Length: 108
Image (cartoon, rainbow, N blue to C red; front, top):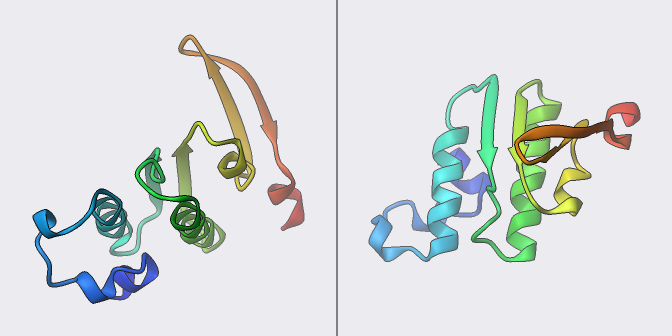
C-alpha cells in the first residue's frame, strides 16, 4: 500500500485493471516495479500515458529512488525528464550519438 500511495493510487488498490484508466494502469505498473527494495529500476517511457502533472510526480518518485541509492535507467523522449538524470545518453539509429552529465550529478 505504501508504494500505491507514492504513485497516488492508494484509494484504488482494491480495483481490477479493467476498472482503471490508461494512466492509472501505468501508475499501477510503476508501483509493481517499485515494490520491494530494488537496486535497479528500468523505466521505458514511464510517463507515456500520464498528463504533465502525473508524469512529473512519477519522475520525482524515480529521482527519490535514485537519490536513495537505486540505479534508475529511464528511456524517454521528453527533454524535461532527461534533465532530472545524472547522465544522459543520446541514441541515433541505434548507436550512441552523444553523452553528457547534468547538473543533478554535480549538485549532490
